[in-house]
Length: 361
Image 1 (cartoon, rainbow, N blue to C red):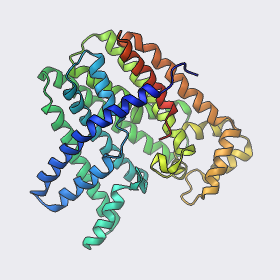
Image 2 (image 1 turned 180 degrees about the vertical axis):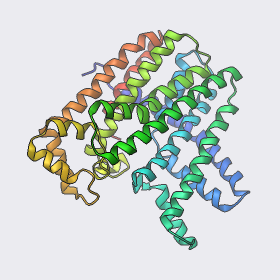
Image 3 (image 1 turned 30 degrees about the horizontal axis):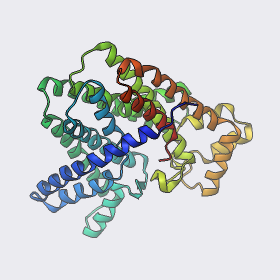
């Protein structure tokens, strides 16, 4: 267990939220006003997008500012504005993910495609209301992806640094899409090995959660030292692993009100999480029989979820995944001296990756 807890990292995130949230609100309100000049429909799309976006943890935006700082960047406003690029991108991905996973809830609000299903009913649009809602999500997320690029191009930094950050953004955005495609396919197929699951988690989540924002922030500050960039990348990947592993744990064991989405939804969707894969390999015949009964079953009950929680503990699947998360925390911590000699920034980097495994939402 780590000597340092996640309190410094948690405070760093809070400070980032306090400073960036007003900027995020101001930027999106401006875009809502611009959209309203075209029609009330795009304005409504952006308004509801903002309602969901403002409830996020903003971890990726905070990592952009941290990457910028460890690379020697000193303009705090530039760092904060750069963080908005990743937050726009991230929230748009989540909204698309809810459609693909057929989730109903996001950040304690109805998923956006369900909001626009109801909006379509109110307008009495022709055709299937859910299809209308999903189509509206395609429109707003397409727009947001381009708004994030617009924000990147507007940053007050050297154009060469913007190009470098843009190349990183494009590279990892594409890898995220391919990871999501692999995840959807393997979920539909049902059978998968742990090494394949780890590859999917890397490409669909870990890289864009940790590697992309840190490298983009460093690029905006003009970082070119290959050794340092490698250390940032390795730390970012370990950070992303820890984040995603804890996300999977919270998806099964978290408090629904804190997590902001239905606990057990991964079970209903038939997701091949590390918890499920370990149980399939190490569980008793009775435990695996129950797993086959409920995994991918849209009609499972709360009691089924509670029983699965106990089975995962009994089979030591829970402990196996928790230990794996802490292993990645330790791997990330080893990179910190190679990233920066600044003791304050070192403490933030260490505490922040520890907090990824301590968080409850």
